[in-house]
Image 1: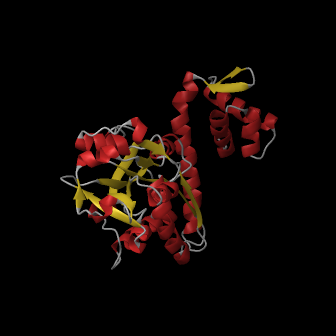
Image 2 (image 1 turned 90 degrees about the vertical axis):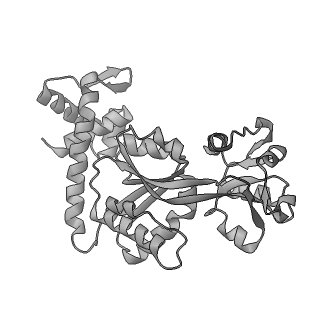
Image 3 (image 1 turned 180 degrees about the vertical axis):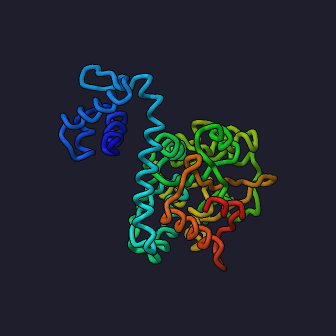
Length: 316
């Protein structure tokens, strides 16, 4: 069985198009069709239904899909392993992160890793946490996902075909500008949050559900202002009498310069956790294992800002 046949099958399954599959596999459309037909002949079963210009996996094709993905993934990892045995002179790591770690943690770790292993190709993307999990669960495009979420939110994902491991804590802080009345207070009451506008980066943030689960407080929809990005949220807080709740990593520089102030919420400890997400039984390449090593060294180095749970070392 030619590995190109299996790769073409996966491309057709993903794109639902022989034309696109042919482009991805650097062959003609007729060659892509012949490869799929040879696979169907091999099993003596129809793997795709042709409906109009689109093709769809049959029930049999759906059952075979994860097994063929595993074969192709193992084949590619084997080839990569051979190349990387020479002191990581070749290789690639691919990471997808939610916005907080993707913007404020991962870049520093990637830069440090790149200095150590300049020949390793790095691909890092940012998406909403639920899309990070979906990508890890449904595709083989990324080796590792990194997300920041409340612990309760994570529970609903544990039955999926993924592994979720706590990496470190992600402290949340209430932020206001330096002239805000709260800036001079040691702490505020939960009821104080009801009177001011809260700036949020996106409509789908888990923050509101987390705040409600923790305090029973439900902020009025009229008080929510969706800004579009974490950087925009910080600017909005800086130039208004509103507030936001962000990761301490995201506002480290602004708190250090004094343009933003953090306020403690009386009787409550606001926090999330940062998790590493991977496919169950995923075999990491040497490059990916080295990157995980680098992450641990980075967060444990003297004077570092993070403290990592020892159990995270089990990932490497």
